[in-house]
Length: 249
Image (cartoon, rainbow, N blue to C red; front, side, top):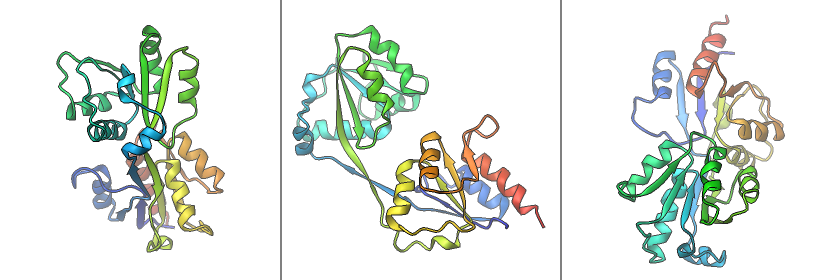
């Protein structure tokens, strides 16, 4: 079966020069983008119900750009002026650079991990007397609170936004040859919208172990698993897969 139509379960981000647009042009295939999930920010009242007071904390642990956005959004709405001496721990360089949208780097104390949350533990261990706040969505990898609980520190999680399934009732999913998923929430959204979803000949591509596990748990057959040493990106894996299938006569 040749690949003609692909559905990416996220909105198109960036310019028209993305790897997916290049792939579409180079392989003469159609690639559609549709967000399977929606992010809804918590209100000031939601934060108060969690008994979270931003002023109680001296360090903020950022694990995503969305957590940065919602922390500063709520700080403003709750009239909390983030002090200049606040310390920030960012899981990746991308998140740390994104912080510049809200703060001036000069004279700020920012610690940057390499990739995983585990990379942040040396800093956390170094300052056991600090009070750590972890802004997050309602979905959080269980290993993160497990690691924090092992550090003998004061920390709290603040759920500042929630991930919900988008309305996909108008989606004609049967016309696609490949579905591409990047998070377990997107897998959930598929079945929230189509409880009796029948995969038939649709190929499934997943990014990350958690997404892969969710797809298997949902009973899906997986054809593309990313990342791998050979294919660190989804676009590379798709290109190889399309080349293989579309060469078959």
